[in-house]
Amino acid sequence: MTEPKLTLGTYHYEHTDALFDGSVGVEGFDADVRTEGLVSDLFHHMVQGGYHAAELGLTYFVRLWNTAESPFLALPIFPNRNFRHASVFVRADSGIEKPQDLAGRTVGEFALWGHDPGVWMKGVLADEYGVTADQCSWVIGGTNFPIPPFAWIPQPVPDNVTVRHAGDGQTLGAMLLSGEIDALISVDVPQQILAGDPRVRRLWVDYEAVERDYYRRTGIFPMMHVVAIRKDYLADHPQAPKAIYDAFLQAKDAKAAHYRAQASKQHMALMTPWFSELFAENLRTLGEDWWPYGVEKNRTAVDTFLRYAHEQGLVQELLTCEDIFVPSLLES
Image (cartoon, rainbow, N blue to C red; front, side, top):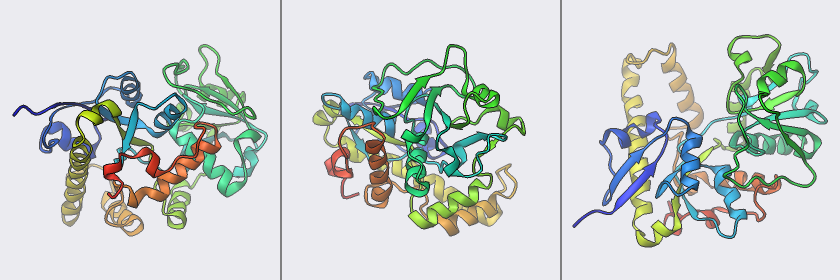
């Protein structure tokens, strides 16, 4: 019997290696696993119908719920997670020393009003420091190179928030340096930071300690992306969600098992100095499964993101895990 075709898109991370080298397959499907040069290209082509299932930024996923009907449901697979306190940058002479100092300032944001790190950090700023988005003015654009507005995705903005796009040829990194913006929330690190320019710095200089404390207090390891599946494909292939979920899980667990096995040899195959101690510290903080898939292990984090997206005007209704995930995987 011929297996059904499945076009599956994801970025080539280390924990998806096994999907690309063929050591893990999608059981019951003739899967064509693809990646693209930029992860945003995956999102773009998924929204345009280029994949049956693919990695999709959570903010892209939720804002499609403002349309007549989103074409997607989510699988509880989170290929990309990052703590994002490290993604807030300020000009060194701006007088911004603590998060509360952002109130009344002009803040840049990469790509969209509400890119994934921006949703998380606006939510954290509001929850933990009392700084809400309407207290700032916002400029959207590219951090290190100009980018046009992403016209292929809905871009709602609340009535009480001032948002404009950077001008032609402008970059947020240069605007931060010149003082046209006071701060920046960006998935891309400004070139000035990478070059060691003392005129710009992170808001939280000791961001690792802040992020570890955030995890210990909240239990949240913020996810940026999810895997989405087309509803029309799901209707024809109801067995697809479990098969895709199992494949991603096996690929992730294979990589985690590799790192655990290499600990006895001090991870000698890696060039990163002191990696073994970092690995051990992460085990102490995050436990054995620090990159969990499934609904139950991620319910608090997902519901927090969905609340933030609603509060920031990206989606009209307050969604929950039960709304967005394929029903057959709600027990995962």
